[in-house]
Length: 194
Image 1 (cartoon, rainbow, N blue to C red):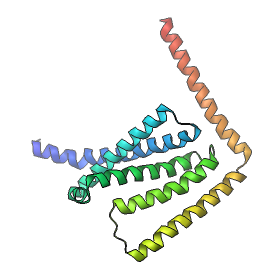
Image 2 (image 1 turned 120 degrees about the horizontal axis):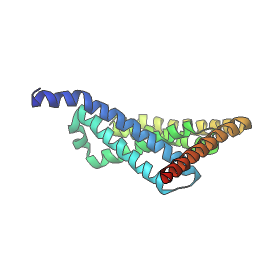
Image 3 (image 1 turned 90 degrees about the vertical axis):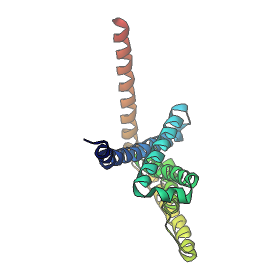
Image 4 (image 1 turned 135 degrees about the vertical axis):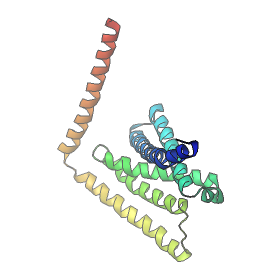
């Protein structure tokens, strides 16, 4: 395989795959860390957040380079990176809030609508969707009102969740953590025994 064909092969298969993985891993890390920060900020969650944002930005850059690198240079790399950062946090808030709604319903009821509004605005700006003044005067209030209604609705749902469901879900998480802790200490004991 000639070097040109090899480069084309890499661009056609591996670059899109890397882009796909980077975007989804980035979103997963951001969403997990944001939700767990509701229980208290610690170095592990902050590290996951930073790594997730980095992956998401790399995926965004790779995606836009495949489409039109000139567009990024035209709008400015700083603006592109900032909007990618905001978009990753917005998506992470929605994703994490939905995943852990049963664990932290009150916190998730804030995360989901706020993340939707943040992500939606960042998406419009990042994708350079041209909107006229009248469209902006409709979209911004409509987004805020819609997300406020969603937040109130989620808050109401969180208040009527069956207590048994919350306890079962929380107990399942605690059992998983306890099992993980036991298996770790067993592995350490076996390691010291040899």
